[in-house]
Length: 160
Image 1 (cartoon, rainbow, N blue to C red):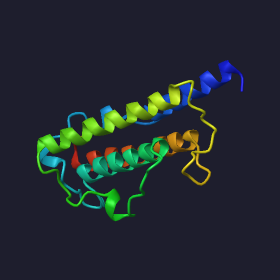
Image 2: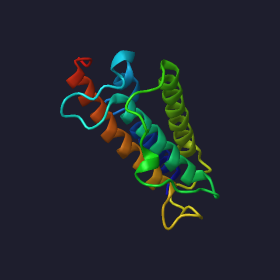
Image 3: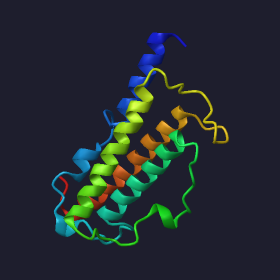
Image 4: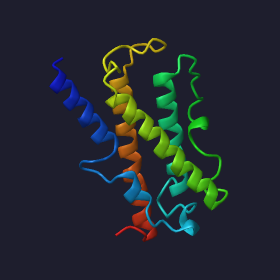
């Protein structure tokens, strides 16, 4: 692949991961959400904001771990991908989850942006996956659940 084309692809994927496109970004989706509503499931919603945030954090971390860790161990689906409670134990728990999400997203963006990362090489401990596939999986998964989080916020009356 030509260097300019590859650089362009890397930038497009990073932009997709950071929501610089057609959907809400993570920071906008969590901004101003009152702590008292983080564990509330509005009528008709399957999950609270906390459950969505934690699921996004767990899944993103799992995908990043798979992408870079030759000793990766798969989580059990679905029980290890969702929090056990519908509300965070504290504001500090919410903040830790937010920070961990940001950290792992930044790590995936750095992995994609790194010119020494072969986006198309099969991950040695996988069964055909590539870094490009895993980055797109994170982007797709996050976009879906960010939309869900926005909907929950609308139903709670906290999204304008």
